[in-house]
Length: 197
Length: 281
Image 1: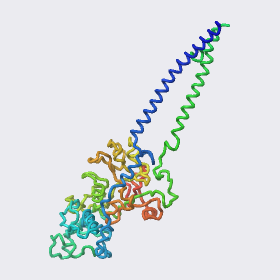
Image 2 (image 1 turned 180 degrees about the vertical axis):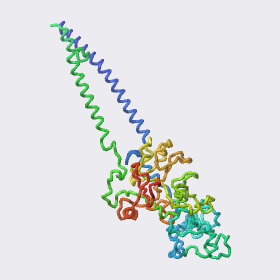
Image 3 (image 1 turned 60 degrees about the horizontal axis):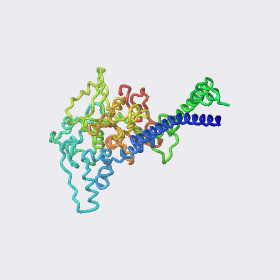
C-alpha cells in the first residue's frame, strides 16, 4: 500500500512538472502563432494585390499607364477625311511634316468630325487665326505666317549640311521680293501642302 | 522498495538538466536542430519565386534575343540620329502636349553642341518653339568648327540605377524593357532622380511623384509611335523592336555604328545614338 501511494505520488509529481513545462511552451506557441498571423495580416494589407505577379512591382500599374489616351495624332487621322490634302501632299517635300505642326492639335476638331459623321447636323467649328504661339490653346488654325516655316528652316549653327537652310533677309533680297516684311512671303512662291523647292 | 534518490533524479533529470552527460547530448541535439532549421529556412529564399527577376528577359543576360516568336513580348529600342536633327523643337512640344509635362520640366530635350574654333565647346538647349523668334543670341557661323544637335531622353537602361535605388519598387522595368514609374507606389523621395546618371528624371510638381520619359508607353502598347518620333519632321528619332532583326531600327543598328551615352557606367542603355563623339555625355 505504502509503495503504490508513493508511486502514485511520484506520477502526480511527474505530471505536474511536465504540465508546468508544457504550459510555458503552449504560451510560447500561442504567442508565436499570434505574431505570425499578425505579420501575415499586416503584410497583406500593406502590399498591393498585384504586386509581384510579374516581378518586383505592381503589375496593375502597366495597364494603368497604358490606359492613357493618345493626344498627338498621326497624319493618318487627319487624312482619313482630308483626302484632297493627301493627294496634294503626295509629291510634296513636306510629306514627313505632320499636320499638327502647322494646324494645331485639332483634338476638338477630330472629336467634332467623328460626331458629325454620325449626325450630319453637327456643326464643326471652323479653323481660327493662329496667335503666333506654338503652345497655343487654339485647337485648329490655318495660317500663312512664315514663323511656321522658319522654325525649321531658318539657318542656324548646328544644322545638317544637306538640310535646306534660309537666311530670310538675304533670301528675300536675292529673290527681289516685293514686300520683304510680309509674314506670308514663303507660301507665295513655295506653296502650302504641295511644297516645291 | 522505496524509490531511491537515484530513481528520482533519473525521473526529473531531463527537465532539470542536472545530469552532465544528458545536458551535453541535449545541447548537441539542440544545436543540430537549430542549424538544420536555419539552413532550411535560408534555402527557401533562393527558390525561384523569391528572387523572381522576370522583366521579359531584358537583355542584361542576353536572354530571349535569339528566339523570336509572334506572341513574344516585344523588346523595344530607340535610335537617335544626331546627323539628321535640325533643332526645330517639334519633339519637345509633342512630348509636353502628349504627356502633360508641367512648364519648366522636360521628359526630353535637345542640346546643341557647338565646337568653336578657339577650342571651346558651348552647349545650349533648343527652345521649345524653335530658335526662330526666341531672341537667343546667334552664334557667328565663321567662329564655329562643327556643331550638331543631340536629342536627349530616357535611355531605358537594361541595368537601370534608378530602379535599384527605389525603396518602394515604384520604379520598374516593364516586360517590354521600358523603364516606368508607378505613380501610386511612388513616395516622391527623389532618390531615383539623383541616381539617374543621365538626369532624365524629375519630381512632377503636379503629382509629387517621379516622372520621366516612358517612350510613350500608352502609345506603343497600341502600336503607335512615341509622340516625339511622330512629331519629328526629319526622322531623327527612330523607334522599334530591337528583338526583331527585320525591324527598321534593328537593320539600322546592324548597318551603322551606334553609340550609347556614358557606356563606361555599365547601365546598358537601349536608347542608341548615331554620330556622337565621346564629348557627348
